[in-house]
Image (cartoon, rainbow, N blue to C red; front, side):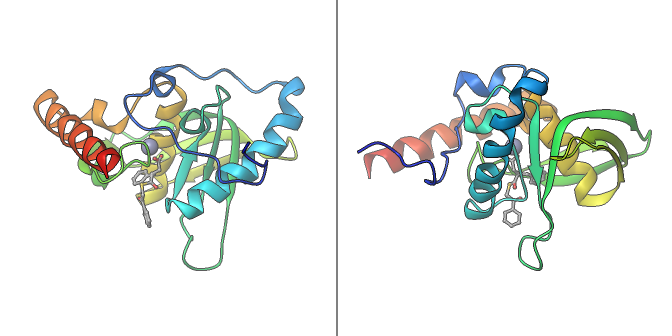
Amino acid sequence: MSDAVTDTIPILLVPDARLRAKARAVGPADADQVRLLAPRMLDAMYKAPGIGLAAPQVGSGLRLVVIDLQRDEKPAPMVLVNPEILALSEELATREEGCLSLPGQYAEVTRPARVKVRYHDLTGSRQEVEADGLLATCLQHEIDHLDGVLFVDHISPLKRNMLLRKLAKELKSKARG
Ligand code: K1U
Ligand code: ZN
């Protein structure tokens, strides 16, 4: 049976090549697609569960990100169209990251502690957000996805290979049932 449009959109897993492609800017002709895709991405993110999701993770090549750090309390979804990093702090922060495209895999990642991001919201208004803490990490993680970059690219090759081998083993064992 074919999928209904309301079905949960599947999240792609590493090593899917679509996760390594650079996404393209959303333009005026993409408005309808973005209006349909953003709520489906939020739905997939809440169900996963996760705190962020980028369009390439659901097979779309658009520069679109959704984030909600309040997922267990009152929902506060952010939809970021064409997000751009305007400034990064020199100060760094290390935080454990996970990724819905590498389920069950976690690593400490060091990134700039604060970030300033410009984006457009779903109404087309230009917005800016300055963030620290988990939101700063999440914004950088999701914008990386738009450039085909995964959190494992920020750790040592040794740790990365261990983590990718562990993921491959776990996915193989899950597929066997
Ligand atoms: O992009 C993604 O794959 C989503 C990812 C975002 C993220 C998490 C941690 C640091 C940086 C970016 C996730 O949401 S992984 C799942 C997760 O962190 C989580 C799940 C349930 C409750 C709280 C957090
Ligand atoms: Zn991710």
